[in-house]
Length: 309
Image (cartoon, rainbow, N blue to C red; front, top):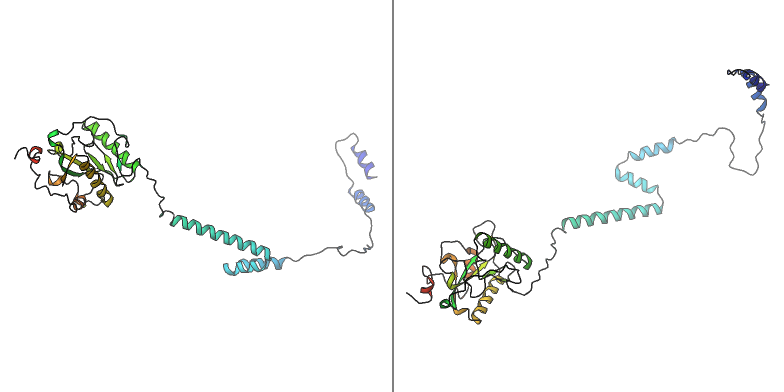
C-alpha cells in the first residue's frame, strides 16, 4: 500500500510524498515478535546488554605512571612473563656494551697513535738521488785544502722531520729555496734529520756555503730543526743523530776526505751567530773531536792548513 501511494505520488511529478503513519504501521507488521530463545550446548552466548567495567585497569595504569622510576620499572617487570623479561635484559646488556665501547674508543682511542711506517732506501745514509735532489754544479774544494781538518756544525733553524719521506720533502723544499732565492745549492755537505739519518747535501770534496770564510776548507754539517734551548719551542737532539754524524765523519776519514785528527767546531765559535743552538752545542762538547774554536777563530783556510802564519 505504501509502495502504491509512493508510486502514485511520484507519477508525473518530481515531489515525493511520504505517509509516515503508513510506513510505521508497515514496519510494525514486518518485525517478528520473539517471545523466547532456546540455546543448547553453548556457553558463549549472551542475550541483552552487557556492561564491561574497565575503570579499574585504567586507574591502575595511572597509579603506576605516578610511581618513581625504579618502582615503575619494577612494577612493569612484574607484569611481564619470563620471555619478555629475558628479552628486556638482553637489550639492556647490549645497550650497556655499546655505550662502554663508545666511551672507550672516544677517550682512549685518541691517545693511541697508529705506528708510522718509516722505510728508506738505506738504513742511515741517504744520497742525493734517494731524496730526489735537483742537479746543480758547485765548486770543488781546492786541492791544497784536502783532506780537510775542520768540521763546522750548524742547524737549519727550520722545520723538523722524523721519517724518510718527510725529511726528503723538507730537503727538496730547502734546496728549492736556495736555488730560487740565492742561486746556489743547499749549503751543507751533509744534513742530519730528526729521524737520525744522514742526508747528502753537496757531498764530499764540494765547497759549501754554510760558514763564511771557512767554506773552502771544511765539511759543513747541518742539523735539521731549531736547537736554541732558550726558545719556548725547540728541537731536541737524539743520541742516534750524534752517532750517525760521527759515523759519516769516520767514513770521510776512511776515504781520505778528512784528516784523522780533525776538529769539530760549532759555527758560533767562528762567526757571530747562534747556530747550531745551545742544545747541539752541549752535545758537541761531549765529543773527543770537539774544539771550542780557539785555534780556528779569525783564521783563514791558508792559515788553518799551515801555508801562512
